[in-house]
Image (cartoon, rainbow, N blue to C red; front, side, top):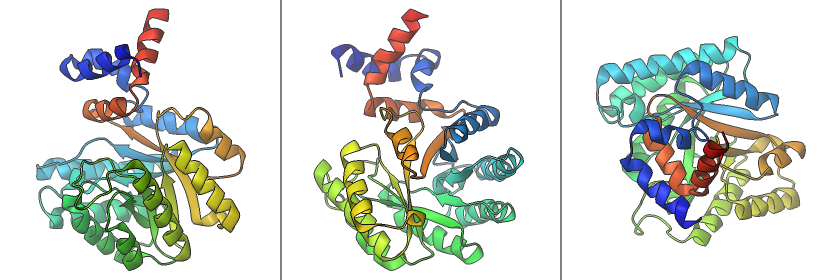
Length: 299
């Protein structure tokens, strides 16, 4: 990262949204459903699967939570009608958990009912540790209705191995990610290598349970370690896939994985609440600021 990239990245939160929009574009598949579906169609044409997420969290208005729920239900119909290879991912606080667990369960079950209608899959996203137990409770309620529902395990949390021991079986489906929320060292690993080691430990635990696992990481070193283990232990291809966020630079690695026959799923966020999400991605990849400025001047 250059000093210039750092200055741009740190300045954007204080500038008008119209100025920030070009920097957000690599990470967000537009503001409308049509734009998101177009991006998914393009990803499918390149051999990638997708999962789609409406940006937003911590909804505190009941009517809004139910409107967002309705939007997710319509997405399943749009995916089906367009013949797309895509699932849906939903944050519990986006559909009511900040109001009550009862509201979140009711809305998540409505979404899941639509997933079942179309034979699709629902991923329940994981947020900060304050809602981890409630998120697993929501998952368990959903599991009673329909098997094709999964949750997320965060590799930086100490508790995650026990969570897999509790939940894991041949019907369990989880995405493992490192975790993006700031958590105390009393409950979460802080060191990068410790998180990598625990990520791989959790992946192995999932395989022993014959659970399906999505390896969600952009860490090339970790991907190398996962590949070495998968190939040496001959982990069955139907038990895993690689996952990545839309727009995060991977230097052709995802295409290489597809060429080798691995399934790769791209997490595709869209919607009007793009600003805060984009800032998080830009802080993780500040080099993108220089690329955007360079391209603007070329134009």
